[in-house]
Length: 218
Image 1 (cartoon, rainbow, N blue to C red):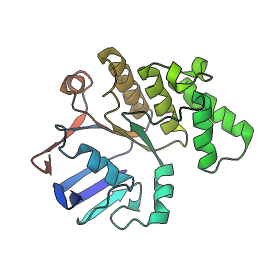
Image 2: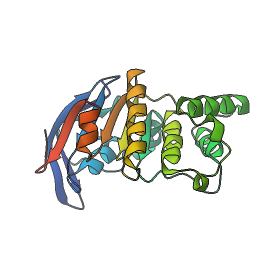
Image 3: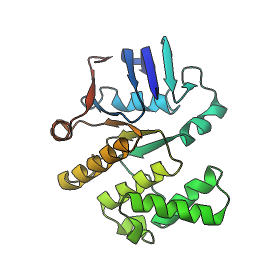
Image 4: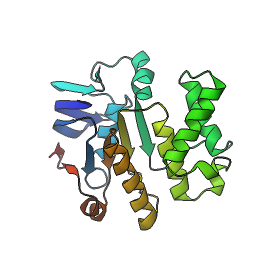
């Protein structure tokens, strides 16, 4: 089991965001997280990689880590085992697509230059960006930047990918390509939890749905 939450409470700045959050996600499972803006989707995802603390709950485990009792020094270890895809890309603008990926590998302990280059080539090919590795982020379209972000998320062979509104800044056609890619990654064995408010996309690419609403998860 990749994620196992039981009766978890989530707060931000002393304000209740979600309560009685209970769900689990298994290896290779694709799951949507839906809800209106401000319903708690991003806050819930942030508890899974140690950016938001959990004040109360019976259980909150992610990739074998107890995220309720997570120590600061454990956060990098946890994040290295997952891939995180952000809506706003968060690519380094002063270096190429491939160098963005090399930077992450070096930061997570990779040292062999040949192995680094091989891994960068592998993940860029996996997302269809092997021919644009040399390009700077500003010269890539939004969809291309998001593919690089997904490649970045794949670098350390994560069992779990957390995607926070990954299509929010993309046109519908490009957004559908990104969701199709995430579904393919799930079919290859990665668990994927994707936050979205695009219900048409959920209908067109069916999968299990968790819904945030009225301070509860259903």
